[in-house]
Image 1 (cartoon, rainbow, N blue to C red):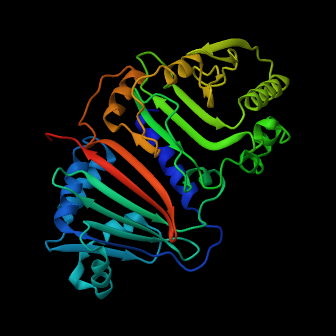
Image 2 (image 1 turned 180 degrees about the vertical axis):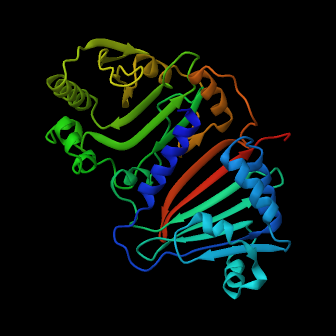
Length: 369
């Protein structure tokens, strides 16, 4: 499985977690309106992904676009394929005419109704360089489980603790509800057995509510990309004690060895023979500000190697789309083939507002294409 497939699947899962509503209510409805020229340009960008299902579908939709100023569609059910297939001229439908007015000066507008009757709102605008600015408004109260970790709070997460050099994905957040690990594992019997629920590692009082993760560009021959997680803490002593307790819990379940480890002057521990997945030999160190846990020792060293910070103190999500093809090639040993991604970088930042969580996404277009 390539890194692009993994990232797209992860993003889809994260979106579902963040937007899942607790109770079904009225039937879904989705409505879309856009400038026809903008839709055409967007599909032309996607069509550059030759020999892919997305590229082929983009070319089909481009050829079928009606010849009018603005197009739109609406469906009484949650069906993206039906929404795209139903594109027609705005002037043919009074409901679309009214929705198109709400689009304003943006290129695209989409409202997608959730089970509880509230809607996710999406607005997209393109500049002269074909960079895309996307604004999503997620209604309050629709995040559950792991999705709560994606809901930003009012406070900035502060400076990144992991390097951004050669990162494929870099995310840093201070969730609105903090990091409640007890709640996250409460519904999973296997996780309950692993963490034993009384473990100090689950105590929210130990952590300061910030979390950060980075996936790095793999080198040729690696079976998995380097991956690291940083959990900010209030007390370094308490955090180390909790981590050591968790390690002993693991060792009571599996016959794993432990070795001393350090990275960038920070002490820690590795479990070198817990190889239940490719290259997995988890390690951790305690820096002055965070527990840094890596897929293996090389991951921790990579994360603490210094260099470009990547994310600004406001945090958010950064995805280096231009590096994904090289990552695929390094993991699979196959040369890079086909067209490059039409965008080179994605940066998303969210904040909580009165009417929900507003997420702003900037997609940087590839130049010279």
